[in-house]
Structures are given as structure tokens and as C-alpha cells.
Length: 252
Image (cartoon, rainbow, N blue to C red; front, side, top):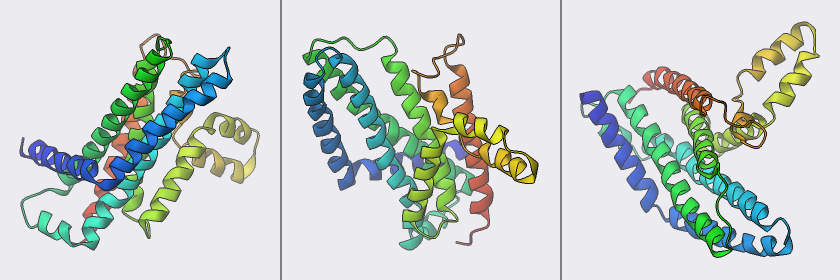
């Protein structure tokens, strides 16, 4: 119980700091303006206006949430180490696994909150234009959040050995990009032989398959999307376990 209480406290503080940060206002305003600007593109595609509005909205929601959450994931622990605030945290009876869990949970909550705000704006736009949301609307938003969970988990792990927050964001962004081409990469790698082919196959499994969360190409299974949830949880747990092991080696 103490472990969960500590994790909850760290998560609440992480979420509170992220939301009150001035960048949240910037990103929220930018996302709102960008989504409203998508109306112009929708008007230009009269026959496909509903689809254009939906696709642009989902794309902007994902990119804005990714950028903001990734920024905070890359800065969360290095910033506390730089300001020495982490020494104050561990001067109390706080376990490192609970601390890492709290940091991750706070950032997951941040991603969910941002998506909820932007989804409300997006739905209002669709409503104003007279278009009902597609049947899978909330499934698509949930899948975007699951992708954010995976990338946040990896970014927290990378931040523990990366040389700077910028390099953490760059590496995480590269993983996010490669994750959308994992099926194609594995198909090409299958044709490679020898030792190099074996290395490439192993490396391919170290990249999360984010294409699973593109509902247009990989619709939810008959199980209602539980595979996607399980896959995201597996990556999050693996990254969390690796982060805890690496975090234990740091001296505070």
C-alpha cells in the first residue's frame, strides 16, 4: 500500500507540474488553432470534407500530444537531477520503483488529459460542420493514447542513459517513426540472410509495432482490441523494468 501511495503522490505531482507549465498553454492553443484551421482544408475537399476533417484532427491530436508528452518525459528525471530536487525526494522513504512508476503514470495521465481536451475540440468542430463522429472515433483516440504510453515509457528509459534531453527526444522520435514502418521493415529483413540478417531480425523486434494502432490498416480484432492493450502494456512493463534496473545503479 505504501508503494502505491508513493507512486500516486509522484504521479499527481508530475501531472500537476506538466499541466501548469507554460508550454501546456502554448500547445493547447496551437492545437486548437491548428484543428480549427483544418476547416479550411475541409472546405477545399467538399466531397470528402468529413474524412479530411477527421484525418487532420486525429493527426494533429497525435502529434501535439506526442510532442508535449515526449518533452516532459525527456525532461522529467534529468531536470530533477540537475536541480538536485531528486536528492530531496530520496531523503525520504521513497523507493525507486515507486518513483519511476509515479513518473510514468503522471505522464500517461498527461497524455490522456491532452487527448481528452483536443478530442472535445475536434468533436465540436465536426458537430459545427454537421458531421457525426465515425463509429470507431473513441477507439481511435484510445489507440493514439496507447501509442503515447509506449513512447513515454521508452523515453523515460532512454533519458536515464542519454547525454541530454534533446538526444532523448530525437531517439524517441526516431523509434516512433520506425514503429510505423515495422511490418514493411520485417518483410524486407526476412529476405536478408546470413549473420547480418539475423542481427537485423533481432533489431526489428526491439522496435514497437505502432502500425497495430492504425485502425484503418489494422482494425480492432473480435476481442475488442484487447491485443492492442496487451501489446502496449507489455512494452510499458518492459521499459519500466529496464528503467528501474538502470535507475538503481544511479547514486543520489
